[in-house]
Every structure is written in structure tokens, then in C-alpha cells.
Length: 205
Image (tube, rainbow, N blue to C red; front, side):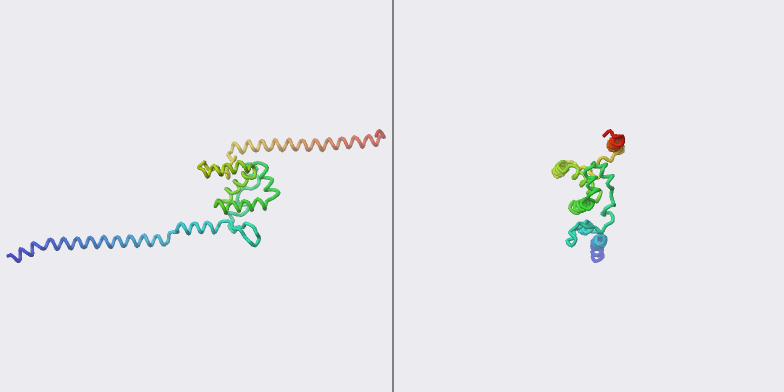
């Protein structure tokens, strides 16, 4: 009786120990499985360094042979963003005429800004247009941004529908006024010249 009682007394402890060991084993196996799964997924996730390296590799670069900034990405090439008329609307006639008469210089400045600032072409063109229009104001704005001020969106400056309409009306008026001056000046010279020729033919001069 004592032996039977003794075995019956120790049986629950062994059962509890077995259950505890089995639970611990399951926990360890689950932890290993989760760690392996995370490691597997991380192996296919791009790291921050690789993303940064890809971004830098796609940025415009300086070619020492031609001594020019170049790019192989279509989205960064000239013509991929807004044209000279867009420059005229955003920043006025000064950068507009720079683009018309010095397109290569303008493009080189834009590519250099893209490479140094890490921005897209539209943002680089907006900043370059603002710089050409007023270098002092642009420089002051950049210093203010470094000190915590808001970042001005030069890429979309003055492109609100109302502003575009007002600029268009103003531009048409200016062109008409200048055209009228030129036309009237030509006409006046023609009339004066015709008058003098007539007087010469009549022998009055």
C-alpha cells in the first residue's frame, strides 16, 4: 500500500514537469520560427543604404572628359519638365531670356543643382529661375530655410489659376503696347521718308 501510495503521490509532479517542458519547447520553437521568418523577409527588403546608393547613382554626375554635368535618366534630361514659357510665368523675363539665349548654361546649372540638392528637375528649374530673377532674395530664402523657416515651393510659384490669368493678360497688354510702338515708329519713318522723296521730286528740297 505504501508503494502504491508513493507512486500515486509522485505521478502528478512528473506530469506537470512534462507539460512544462513541452510548453517551453513549443515557446522556443515558435521563437526560432519567428526569428527565421523575420530574417527571411529582411533579406529581400531593401536597406536604407542601398536605397540611398541607388538614388545617388541615378543623380546627374560630372563628366571629367567633357567637363559637363550629364544624366542618363530621361526624367532628368532637358525637356522633361516645363519649358521657357513656364519659366516666364514662374519668375519673369530674366530667366526666360537666359533659357532662350543660353540654354546649355541654364541646363548645366539645373543638373548641378539636382546633383547637389538631390531633387527632381522641376524643383531644380524652379530654384534656378528664382535665382536668376533675384539672387539676393533666393539666397536669403535658402538661409532662412536652413534656420527653420518654411520651404518655398519655387517649382509651382505663381502657377495658381488666378495668377496665371493675370500674368497672361498683363503679358498680352505689354506685347501689344510694344508692338504698337514699333509699328508706329516704322510707319512714321516711312511717312517721313516718303515726304522727303516727294519734296525732292518736286524740287522743293
